[in-house]
Length: 298
Image (tube, rainbow, N blue to C red; front, side):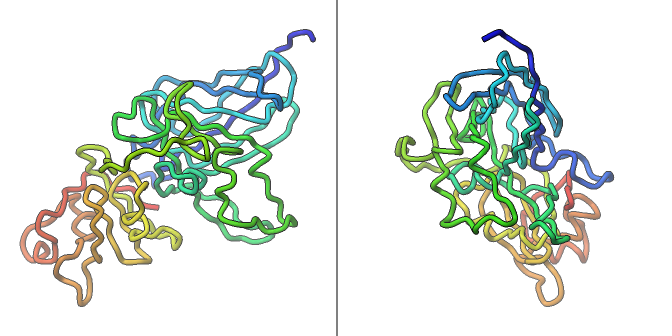
């Protein structure tokens, strides 16, 4: 077979970069680096690579070159040392086949996750939108993030509007259509091949993180985020729930408001001054409330 140079296009959207209000600072340490993307054919043979970056990628499109014109049914994504939380990946391959994946699968399969501000079209034929979770990857594991590499076999994530509803919780895809490793050539992290690891106290937030994510989305629940063992990221407020999650301590507090003035989180103070205010307003603030210098609103 003669060698050819064909190109596929991979589009990656990270958890928060590129989705926030213009007046808000970008949330770094969620749009990290992809070192490289590798493509494999139906037989598991490597047929292409490329698309990598050395710094923060935000969200963007990446060309991946193939040396043979096989259909690339599997793609692997390798992190660099700048952690990335991936919300969606879509692919348009050289034969114009189109595939997609969302970061919800990281949570399903036991990897580190967080909410995202990415809006996606909901069920076909409706005007509803939803917001996928994002899955963390990081090569050097400096912040206790498990996965350095994720692998996606695209056909396992196809579901059309007229298809039968998916059965079960989706975990049958963990280790099969969706895989993850702790390093390039490292140990598998999901599925039957994953080794049982002793449970230890792990970090759930970047050290010194002074950011606050405020979400008005009904599907974003501060209590669920705080109570989940694999959640990781900045402190979080759910406006529909009226609750705040301190991700460093995994403590849940109500928002201060009518009838709630003690042991609560003062969102107004955090928004207006980026820190607790003095005087009358400070009476509503939990003693020791963390200063918030960066706020992201969804």
